[in-house]
Length: 551
Image (cartoon, rainbow, N blue to C red; front, side):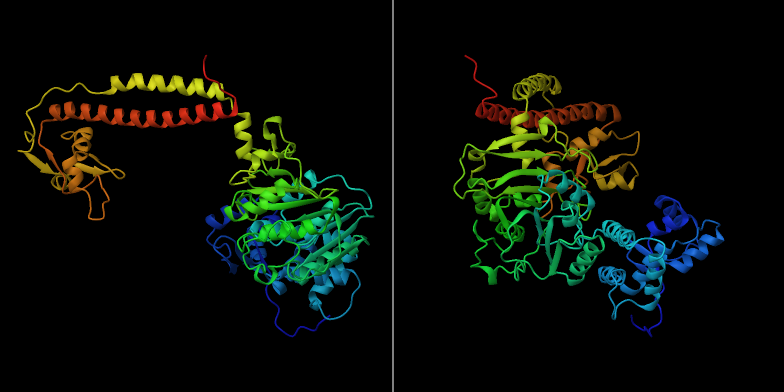
């Protein structure tokens, strides 16, 4: 314990914690911030996640008769955040050390007193689990990637293979141990983990000790550069690796024996973690990797993906529902690998199961429907791209090519028939230049108050001017040249454009013809798009055998 001479830092709370203090929803707190001028001003944080002084919030709640007594758990959490701020994992490790009976310099006396007081009314296990839940909730709300999100943990547990009670489970990037301890739930299982952040590794180990998990050993260090488990072969390796990290040590690890499937490029750090995990897998053992969706198709990783497929190592790829990874909006895949019992080249008649759950809710059922699953032969995956994106393989297998072809063909035929009727009836006029005599500029019309700008295109602001007539002449070749800048960009509202002077009845006659031409052009664009879709469906349907030529 330390004797802290520095003045205490005032605890800060988020909007969500104010809601818990007052027993209301987060939306209610947002309304208070807008409605009450005397609501406390932010004392920290950012524009999207402001923090407020706890004392000021309590005083305001009391004045408004909205307050409740602050629980000891909340007081402990706020006291810890006042001391540790963004380094809360260090505080969690120090609290876990106190609960485990360790002595020595660590927590400030005020925090130690609160921990000891809570330990008298609830078990150390409940207290450390409660703090872990608060930390995970805080990480989720701030978009932090310090811990594996609960939805990802749930998905990994759902798709994990059944393990023997004495199995060995390994996580080479275990963070605070949430994923590792969730999967290895049996007390007799051996759990091994490594984590680069020393505070996270320490907290994970102390939490496991408090939970009575004697088979858990977690060490700190960089798994890729300084593997602390070189001889470990596990029955299951799970990993939620750092995403998008380019400085993972490629230059110093170029000749590493772990790159059996190919040396990953600098941009493919996730595939380095995958091969590290695979190197620690026993024959017949499994690997579950949480991967960004882009790893499934990026050009730089094609060779490694091809080896995973060719050797029969990758068994299943699951595209998880959007929102599963709460720290970011990127799609997430779960790659399920298995090391063959006997090494050798896989039979290309085998398949990889593709599961696409992207239409599901992130909190919904993870068991896929029949139309969300496809067993894809290895030979189909071994093309120029080796794309392992589930959706790309499911769409071609579950499409109703005959129905799509028939519907698109009928729609195209109907659209072509309508095109001729859209063309306006036109007769010879007075000849080229016959309307050039009496003209007026758009600038003059705007100064007279006859033209307004509702969006990018000018419209009539008077009964004396027809909008279709105005816009039709503005789109003519002559006015298009006047409205085109030196850089080649075109603006329909060119003030220098000129239109002929006509009475309103004549304007409406021309406007009707211009309106019909616009509808014709839109119909042509629709025909062009339908033609493209129809040709694509016909070609793919013929290639897959779903369609055949008429006899």
